[in-house]
Structure formats: C-alpha cells, structure tokens
Length: 239
Image (cartoon, rainbow, N blue to C red; front, side, top):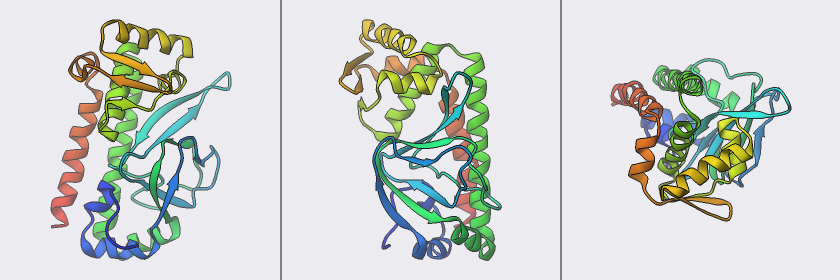
C-alpha cells in the first residue's frame, strides 16, 4: 500500500520501521458487528483501526453475557504485543463502529520486530498502554457509578469519531456497561431529561458535551495521559 494509514500507531513509526511493515499491510473495510476473533481463536493477524473505526473486546461472563472491557480506535491496534504474538484470543474481538482497518499478518510483524529494536520498543510501549487501559477499566467498574461510566464511554466514542451523533444503541451501551438493556435505557432517559443527550434510531446525539464530561469519571483522562507519556517518549526516541 502507498502512504500511511490514518492510524496513530503507524503514523508515529520511523520511516525505516514503517517500511518494514508496509509491504504486508492490507486495508480492509469492515462493517459494525464483524467479529475479528472469537474467544479461543488463534490470533493470526494484527489489526490497526483507521479514522473513526472502533474495535471492542467483549469478555464472556455468567448467564451467557459479555462485558466490553476495552475500546480500541485509531490510537492503537488489536493483536499487537511487544514480544511474541498472542496465540489465542481471550475475548471476543468485534468491530464496534465500521470503517477501514489495516491487517498485518502476525508472522510479518514478528519478523519486523526481530529486525528493528526501535519497532520492538514502540510496540512494547503500546502493550504497556493497553494493559494500563485494562487496569483503569477494571478500577472504573469497581469504583464509579453507572451514570459516570455511561458518560465516560459516550465521551470516549465521541472523541474517537469526532461527531456529536454516536451510532450506539441502548443494547450496545448495555453491553459496554455490563448491565441490562432496561438499566441502560433508564440512564439514557436521565441524560435526556437533563437535555444532555437525545436519541435517534440506532444512535445517541450529544446535546451538551460539556455537561456530559462533567458527569463522566476521570478514567479516560488518566489513560490518555499515560498514552501521551509512554508513547510520546517512544516517538521522541524515534526522532
């Protein structure tokens, strides 16, 4: 492929490191609900979301339910580690918002890391950031209210896609929060009563982004700060 994809992780690679990957990068257009991996699947490729595309990690729990523990957009990748590739997917990895993803075979990624210490370092730093994001999500689920968490996730999706209209249904929000659809609907109705949100068919519309942010917990900000500190250093090291 020619040029660099609209993915921050690929954008920040040095010219040499990007050239190691470029011949193996394959753009694919995937619709929402496309499953990249089911839990237990062999992970044979890494995926880099581009533009507004979003991927989520849904972890199975009791009663045939899933709880979404991680959203990955253009800031990162799925199936990338600083060492050997993960052999099996622990969760269901699904496209939350459709768009372009760049696919990279794991074998090509491993070979490139063996040839470049700086590429290995950048991906190790990203793996650290993703682990920190998971830790922050676990803490958030234990410490913060459903209202705070709902506001946090809606703000996060808004930041990823840059639009006030969020293509997120009540059922999808319930899956993200790990609650029933009726509970998620009550939270949305509360935001609607305060004229912070409105709803359209299959979407949530942000009316007052400032008010929404004030009701969100600070977990997103903590994760973004860590990304900036850790990956910012990696970008500087690459010149």
